Structures are given as structure tokens and as C-alpha cells.
Image 1 (cartoon, rainbow, N blue to C red):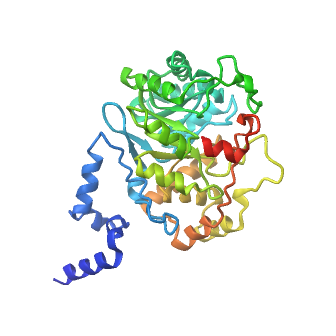
Image 2: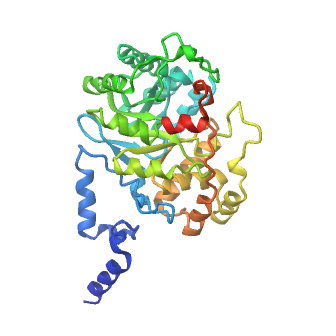
Image 3: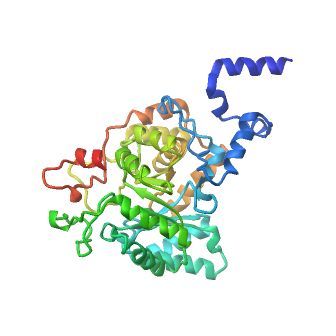
Amino acid sequence: KNFASWLRSERRRHGGEWRRRVWSPWWLCWPWPCWRSARRELQNPSRISLSSTCLDLEDPRLSPTASLPAMALCRIPSYTAGRKMPSLGLGTWLSKRGEVRDAVREAIKMGYRHLDAAWIYGNEDEVGKGIADCIKEGIVRREDLFVTSKLWNTFHDPEDVPKALNDSLNKLGLEYLDLYLIHWPLAFKRNATSARGAKIPESDYAKIPISKTWKAMEKLVRAGSVRSIGVSNFGIGGLKSLLSRSTIKPAVNQVEGHPYLEQWPLLKFCKEQKIAVTAYSPLGSPGRDVKASGEPHLLSEPSVIRIAGSLNCTPAQVLLLWGWHRGTIVIPKSVTKRRLQENLEVFQDMLSGKKALSRDNWLELNKLDRKYRFVTGERFLRTGQTVEEFWEQS
């Protein structure tokens, strides 16, 4: 009787939020309707189960509401059945040739199972060699890995989409991809420059609707060479347009995400549409070779350093915790064994409950938002277009 009375008071006090609160393990094991409902959702392969993206749609900035034990794996849809996408991945953007193979091999040995690659990074062959080394040594099986790659802008013609995929598969040494993304909502001509950082001239743009490219992506899923498809660097407008013309919904939207660039409206929209969000540059992309004058340094923010001291962890680990707490998948890049281990350790500590951001920590980090992009997309600007207009139209 006393327990039932307490439960009723909790329901009244928290309203609908009581179902989404993070309870102790005994509570999660209790057969309440909310838990059975979540379990049914996970068993339904036709939907994305975003148990790792439990954002409060009323105001997600007020508290870290992600269900931490569920964040190890985020279920995304594939054509035949749901796929589990690890919430920690190894980013390979800007990883130099000669280093990335060893980094991939070391990461898999440590326990990483999610690898993020792209054709334009120019290192897919070395990523593939690192994967092959671990499979050959019996450290991991292919089916235990989640490998992502991306379709570059020069391959948006529907005829070029399967060719681009086959090129990436050959370089990676794989028979299929777990996730294939449209890298940017931009189409270039086949002979357009792909040099890193080079300004794209107006004459290099092609008039190929994203909807046509997406139809070609859907065929890859049906053919079995790709398990799930998604997009990258898409805003709300681009997603709405794509959703209205697609048969298979995007499983993932990969965008820049860190306390300087929270993008709450976009996260809310993706949550509503059951689209998982992957955050690239979660540490503020400190390893970029070309930086803007007066660029802020996220890892040196006083509040980040102070919170790191209070949690007995590094500033980088604080930023990763922030990304997981708001329900995003994070893909920090590193080729250093020590940093790879630190990133994995804080992920494991979060899942075990040893590390977590308090409400005050959460609110303090959210105050850092300044709509600042480290990846501005300036090279893609059309004549007379500003950076703000580019992202609004993406």
C-alpha cells in the first residue's frame, strides 16, 4: 500500500516524465508498462529505437535525460531488420596515411566496434587493412563491426552511386557496408575538384536533385550491398524535402555537434522523425590543419576544465559525456593509443554509472553554445551566398 501510494505521488510530481527517468537497476528490472513498451519497440525492426536518444522534446537543454545504460547500442533500421549502431565510433577524418591502419587495428583490439570512414578522406584502403588485420588474427568477426562510409559529391548521378559504393567496398576490403551516407546535400559534376579545402567553382555544380540520388541509395539497400542508408550535413529543410520523397527513411543524420554548436532544433526534429544523430568533431576538431583566425579552443574552455577536475577525467572525456547525455552517437578521431583508450574508458565508465554529468554540469556546458562551426562549408558557397544561408538551405 505504501509503495503504491509513493508511485502515485511520483506520477503526479513528474507527469509524463516519470516514464523516461533514469532509475536504478532494480527499477529497470521491474515489469512496469513503460519498460515493456520500450522492450516492444526494440523488438520492432520496422522502427528506429532511439532508446539512446531520450531527448525531452519540451526543452532538452534543461537536464541530461538520456537513458545511459541503453546508450551502448542505438538501433537503426535496415531493409530487412534493425541494426545496432555503437554510440562510440572511431572517426578517421584527417587521419594521415601511415597512421590510420595502426589506429584502426589498435582501436578494434581495445574494443571499438564502430568505424566511420568516407571516400573523400583518402584513407579507406588503410582503414580496410586495419580491419583485415584484426579479422585475420581472430580478434573480431566482420559481423561484429559497424562500418560507415559516405558518398562524395561527384558521385550523385544515379548511375555513379553504385560505382562509388563498389570503389569504397574494394578499398575497405568488405562485401557490404553497415551504413552509407550522402556526405553533403550538394551535387558536383564528375570532373569537379575533390582537393581538400579547394574552393568549388560555380561551373562544377551539377543539377541533380537529392531525391534522385536517394532513389539510387535505396536500390543499394535492396541489393544487399548496404544495410542502412542516411545523410550527413543535412538541416531540417533538407530532411523534410527528402522525407517527402523517400521510400526508405534516412536512418542517420551525421552533423557537427559539440557545446559550441548544440543544434537543439535539429536534434529535436530528428528525434521526432526517428532519425539517429551522429556528432562529428565532438571535441571541437583540434587536429584540423587549416583553422580560422581567432578560432576558439573548446578543450581549453574554463568550464570544461573545471568539470573535468571535479569528475577526475580529461576535458575530452567531459565533451564525450556531454554528447552521449544528449543522445547522440559520437565519433572522435584519434591515432594515439592513450587517447583511444581514454575515449573508450569514459564510455565504459558512463555505462557502468561511474561517470556522469550532474544537472549543474549539463547546464553549464549548454551555456557555451555560440552557434560556432569548425566545419563552415565555406568552400561550397555559391556566388553571393553566406555561410548562414548555406546551412539554412542544406
